[in-house]
Image (cartoon, rainbow, N blue to C red; front, side, top):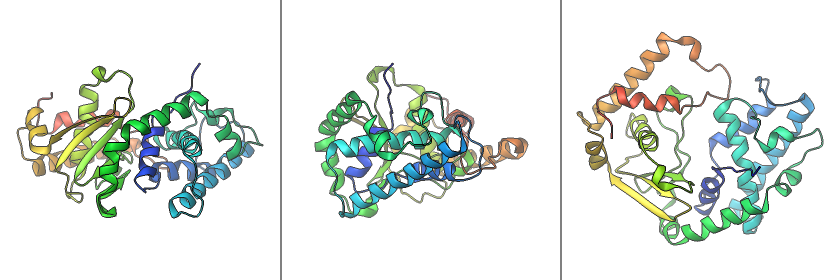
Length: 283
């Protein structure tokens, strides 16, 4: 069975913009070094070596970004593939059965993890980077404050730590590595809408939203007003944000047992559909 890491291309694109991998990967690494129960990790000594490998991964990426250890494309692709499984720990609170980390042993190292990344996955990341070159060259020309990778919002903790892929010059951009773009639909649109509304305080000044289809090299965008109109929004953005905040916090107050007590928040994907409760009819 082939092993895939959908977030790997997202991470590789982040590095191409001069950004770090993002807080989700860091939290996933740190979770392995703490006392939080993590189903799927077979033994404490294995957990310890995975934590060490994760720390080395973060340090290697930092050195590459700082220019002190510039890595070739293949090495970057392999690191991003491994990073995707550390992010999965943050998203799910476990090491899932399909994860490459689930097969770790007490002697596992970062070198071993990167060496085990399938060649087809490295080639796939490389092809997607070739498709992205023209568009992301334009994004790289933006000043650093306008290139945000893995942003978290004022309302992120209301959804277990939800983080978006990019905000680039006011464009909230979600990266999709699907091989079947025609299947993208309501769930993906609501995910974008959820991120837009979680920016309660308009900190990021988002004026456009969009999806980048990395295997097709295609960018689809909408201005925020048009996007909300297409969703049938019946209130201004500021009101929608306030209503979502009230809805989510009321739900948390009603179900305090759902609050996350550890450093690895529960996955927010199901809660994104709370946008249907705050003032639009849907696409």
